[in-house]
Image (cartoon, rainbow, N blue to C red; front, side, top):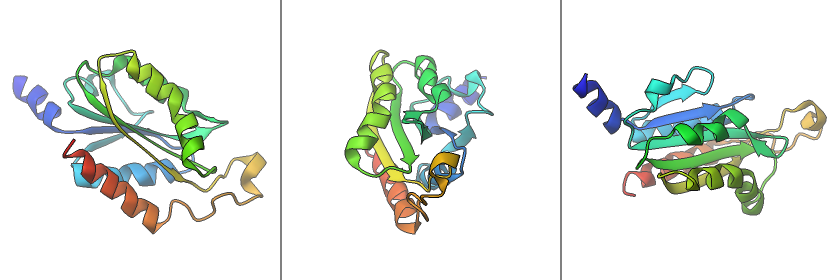
Length: 158
């Protein structure tokens, strides 16, 4: 049993919520350089969080917010864990990304975890109200995926 916990500690975990596959594609790209275990929020079991030293939390932006279940997960992150946040949304720009991610970042700050990075990229908005506008059509693209991999790889040295 101790070896399982030790192995889990050495294996990063990425938890994501993706309604349109944009965030899932980014999560898969980030998992590769980290050799991370990848699990959707729907499939996550609490025991999978225990003993981790690095956890990534990713979500699409839905009505100007990250998915509630991802935000609520902050309370379950093990003490001392390093955490990174990533998101996709139809809207572009760093200021908006910071706004979308701020609720989760503030919640993480309430716990004994270390927020080591944040990443965001546009994602094709397929929500019914905006679908016809083709907001961020074709995103995330190959450049975004490469950037996601590079971001994840940079976390190995943090």
